[in-house]
Image (cartoon, rainbow over all chains, first blue to last red; front, side, top):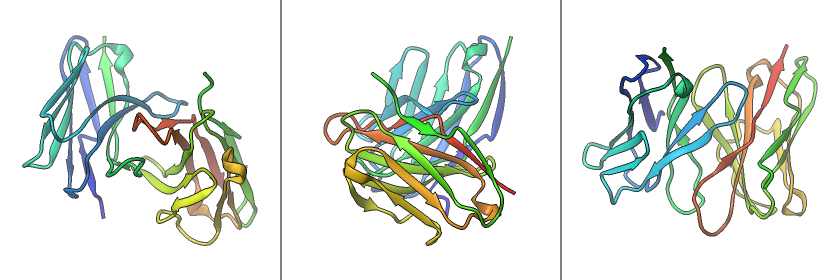
Length: 112
Length: 114
């Protein structure tokens, strides 16, 4: 049972463009929604996270949009750069210290 | 501050053999998690320690997997005997009990079972 569904699996964007990755979840008890970025040979690293009491969070070029009623959230990368090329994972958890439930991952490639 | 470290970075073993993976969490982090990613699929939770106690082991696939965290510091994950489907990248993550919810991941151990 896939509790967090992520799309697309892969994404190619031109430098300067907007990258958008979408996730949908099933469990309404989830209360923490992080996005992780992973470069080859490295472990996932937290990029940005949101809680369901806000609809949007922005950090630099990265924005999470959150739609509680639709049980969906998305990552927007503005002015995408070749250095952003990586695998992105959305995740969800409930409660303090709860396990992360990950989406399938999106391989982003930003072309110069 | 040193990050989460994992050893070895790669391990290639034959079916039926035993392998032990080690994770050293960030100093002071009482939460320690094991996850696994198999062949391009999602990263799946295996288990969660709080200090030396197993808080949640609902993701452990079967009794061939044994996780320990002696003294609440480093953790080991033993697979005995290994099967072909155990191949994948095993990640360890840690977080503090109080404050941030961020889980900090190690670089992973790539396990290949032949």
